[in-house]
Image (tube, rainbow, N blue to C red; front, side):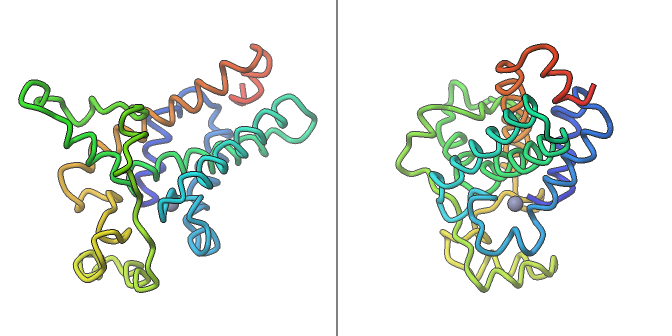
Length: 209
Ligand SMILES: [Zn+2]
């Protein structure tokens, strides 16, 4: 997902709950995952390569950093950084896997009028579907760094590639709004899940209030 969408998803999903300073640190950590060092050799940062086990373990490791930091003595920025990284991976899941396509393929004439915003981010049937997979990043994908060459990459790389599968930006077609909607809802879910574990004082510390 392109940086502008990660930023906008954070601002419109959980932005109002955090202090401006906390949100700034979260956004910076989220966007930092797409720097070169985070793109090479880290499929778990972006739910790429169908590395779902490693990606889910990465999410849990970030949650653990948040719990430790909120309840400990370390600067709270550490927890905000972890939430930025956690939200990046969780958001990329909907842009890099075929979760959204599987959801759309289940729409029937009865529920086919479901709007893109109606997507549920953690549908157990879809998560358990053996067809669920995410795009492989091939070395030739480097040409996608030049925006004008992205359509070419999508055409010449295999159907299982990140280039051919991604819902990273609006040019990827009508399912892009569903990827954004699912990513927003998932980001809210991740925040609520953590807050439910905390005391009111811990919640206030985490939210930077
Ligand atoms: Zn990413």
